[in-house]
Image (tube, rainbow, N blue to C red; front, side):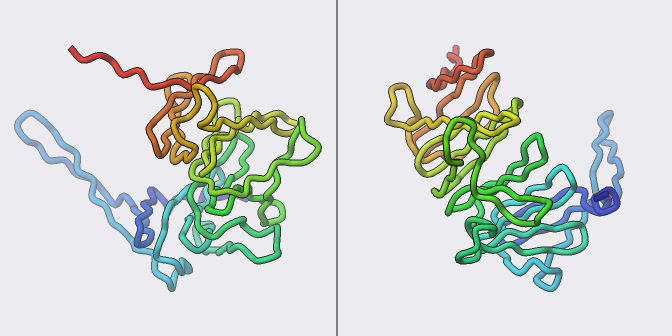
Length: 239
C-alpha cells in the first residue's frame, strides 16, 4: 500500500502522557542579530481528540514504521493510524491472535518490516497479512517456539537484525536467521552479568549496546565473530 500521500500531512509526531499532538511545519523566517542569522520555525500543534478516533488520553509512546503507519501505545490498548483513521487493538481473553497485553512499553521494527510489540504481559509481533498478532517466536534450535510472557520493557533491533528484549526478568537476545531465531538469556546472577534483571532501556553504543537496569548501566560488547560479553562502563578520567 502506498503511504506517500498519507505521510505528507505527518511531519513530526509528539507523544505526551496526556495524549498526542501532530506537529506540522508551517513556515519559517530569519531574524538577523548583528552578524548572526537565526532561523525560527513557526509551528502548529493539532491536538488529537477522542472524536478523531484516539479514545485514550494516556499515550505512553508513539512509533512510525517503514510503511508510514503510526503506532500509539497507551495504558489500555494499541492504536494504528494510517493517516486518516485509527484502529484500536486490545487484548481479548482467549484470543491468542490479539495483542498480548493492553499496557504498551515498547515498539520496534526489524529489517524485514516486522513490528514488535512489548507489553506488561509479554512480547508479540504484528502480522500485516492477517492484521493480527503472533506471540510465538520461531526457533531453530528448540522443538518448540519461544514465548515471552513477562513484562517487556525495551526492544532493540541491531544491525544484523538480531532482536534484543529487555524484560522484568532479564535480557534476551534472539539471533536472527532466515529459518528462525536462536535465543540466549543474560540474567544478573551470572558472573559479569547485568547489575539487575529489570532491564528498562537498550540503545546502541560504539560496537555494542548500553543496557539500563534498575541497578545501573552495563555495556554489551559484541565482537566481530558474534561473541557477547557484558562489562562495566569505563568512564574517561577527568583532568
